[in-house]
Length: 513
Image 1 (spheres, helix red, strand yellow):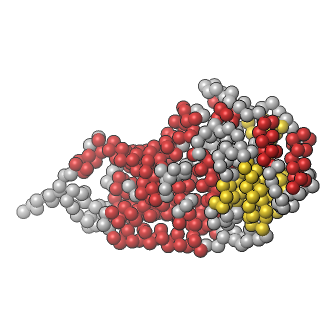
Image 2 (cartoon, helix red, strand yellow):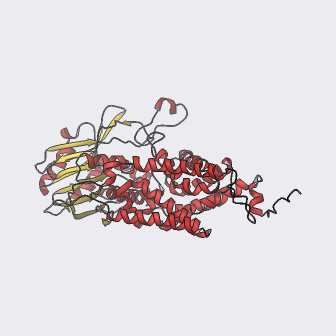
Image 3 (cartoon, one colour):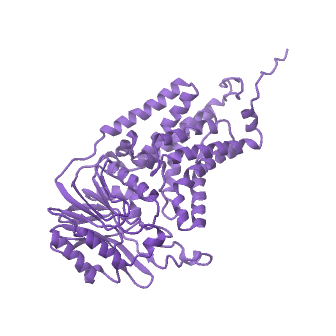
């Protein structure tokens, strides 16, 4: 006798997966999940929302084909990156839309790479980490802004950055999210395994080596204040910007060892050493008998310029300089200018910055200082390179005056906190209109300015030594584990499809094979 086929209940969700509406519904639900995760980001975020948003992905990816999984990723990416990169629309709405589409495509590709079935919970963290690494590197050097890890600067898992950097923090978000998803599905053993792994790694990060404290350094951070927003900031006369910072510098009270000025507050026609502005900075250093570091833009011909952090010693002499290596594409230079000039108005970017070389390090009487100029703080390798080169304190001279909202200054501050944790170094950030801040080596903000206000922050920091595990090993171990997790997910998928390994149908579900 031929056995009757099993009675498999057909639910609306199962039916939708076999029709054209399935991927649309999945993308819509994923869009909502992405929005939830986006609101973990600064400046309006709460870190648990990052885990909550990602926790929806395992259910949304289940039993979908490659196109369906890709559309889930596209939905999640759109929900996350549109609000996360919303600030870009203030400068160029078309360019902002293209960037959002590109960043979303990385997530779509990552979700397509996740296998369906039970293997997806193993592969999902690896896919997200690999996608983040790729988008942080391409195109044009990458765009690691609005990364999911930025929303965790206040979270306990941020300490794991000492072990594996921001990519490990992202992996922990995904592992914890898988644990929550498994808990919701009442699969107790996988839930306990995932959540236990997330908790154990978080605890390991809390006690991981973070270097050692050295001598104290009395530091003053100068913020000149002024108008914010693209129109206001771009309309400022460089002489007015300098005057505001000289006036704020008069509020520096000794004794002080180091004075930090922001990026791009001095704009001169040639090398700063031969300019009147250079003499004014030398006088400011002599007045307080301290090392002074300031951001200087120097013309280098009709269509080139240099963006440098220059250090003056207590005697007023220039002792060292570092020129920005990681430039802002379509901000400080136009990659492929001849090509883009055919169909885009490049007049707002008439000159290209000359890229510097090597790790950001300034050898000064105050100590060896690691430097990341503005945008460079979003790239972990710049902080790691500075620490490996001997930087005992990290400096971030930056200029966020062109952004009318607090979104970019807040994301930059969260990023600086992760860089401090990764390297085990205190960090000082100076911005013309904020946020200027002092951050300790545990990522805690010990002092922060008010946006737009003229202020001087006085704080004692530590010249620290030693290194963290992340400084020693970098991203390679986490990337290797991510690749293993992705491969293991597919291996689990193939193994579960072998004859005799089907779990059998359950009401409303496909056979688990």
